[in-house]
Image 1 (cartoon, rainbow, N blue to C red):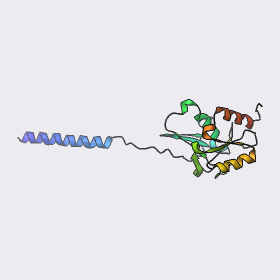
Image 2: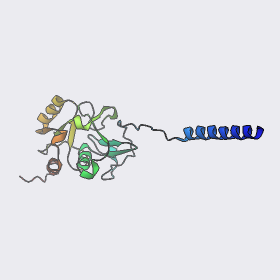
Image 3: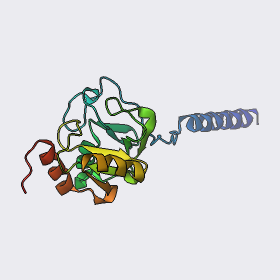
Image 4: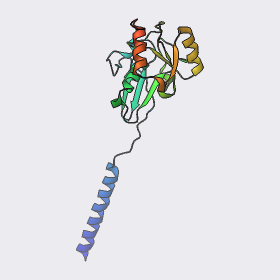
Length: 180
């Protein structure tokens, strides 16, 4: 009887210890944040590899679970996003709100949802400067976007209206290569 009691006690202790260890080793279901992050002086553009902060104008970033892709311009991010292979997962897109940021050094505390922004697209080559390619100026406020567009003879487009053709035309105008 005493052996039966000892064996039962040992078995129960081993079972409890095993359950305790199993509970401790369960993977945590940590929810990764999909909020924007700051740009740093050493950050390289995901597309071109250039140092992001070397360029004026609004930057962009795609924030997914476990990774952030940063871009030297809003246009570069949108060009990347428009590629079908990049539209997977639950990434959130962010751009600087140029209604509240300085063009030379955009403020990372003013990153906004890129899908809700209004974009000033310089299709006239009026001189908005930024990184290589097209220059787009994102705004949270449509009226602020329209004011900048009026100054530069530019257009205001919503996120859904921007496609590769718009980016190519804006890039050509930026570099004086437009074909009429």
